[in-house]
Image (cartoon, rainbow over all chains, first blue to last red; front, side, top):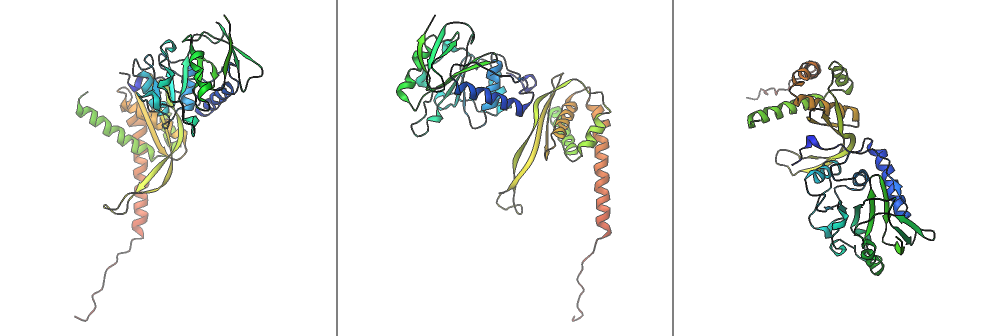
Length: 202
Length: 153
């Protein structure tokens, strides 16, 4: 049990940090596959990367149910930290969550367990925040779709290996679907539901 | 810590909070300057927000929302682990931070006495003085109403 006296602090400068982080996430979503940086100084609980913590403090509030995967909910530290700094409720049912924090992406549950939104409100889907091994090296993924001029190349070590195959459901479900934010340390890249994998190089 | 100790510490923090919330930020800062502060960090940056103030008319009236009030809050953690919280009416973030710092110091065994003597006691005296002056001013204009008995017998 983590007591409040051991919690890591939040943003050093709340307003400016949240604004700059929001800009990074927005740019990442607008330009799928392009890697953005989170410049904000932020304390993070064990198991959570800097980028994930900054996104959490920027986007989460008492209206956004959060689902944590097994590696994030191993100790109560992450849940306690989210509750204190973002007052976000942590829920056990992933299908009603607005955000899912995935610490160990290789154990990503089936996407059907998350919310795809409804046709009337496609924005009520679960946004996955996936911590990955690298966003600079690794296999190249060629992405196409709105926000990309031609094709974008994302070099990343992504687990699970079949992430893009799983995200192919987005094509059939549109406008419903799942948006993904990949995080490595302070680097973030997004795969919104409109992005399609065009080619997959080694 | 026994339940008794816990309760008395809570009462102590509550009393300190009442004094600090009613004091001016400049006064708190002035008295705090007299203490060699231990290392501390802002666990929660001071921030402004709104709280809904509820009221009711009479002890048995139905509660209603009176309106929103601006509140600042902060949380400060000492290097030794004590966490203090500060809430105050208004937008003075620095005041909320200082209240949180004092709350943390009150919980620390090393600083509780010092804060009581150097910060809380003078502030409490100043508040009492203000209240007495106001009471005296009010008392000077007191009018006693009484009904004359009419002589109709």
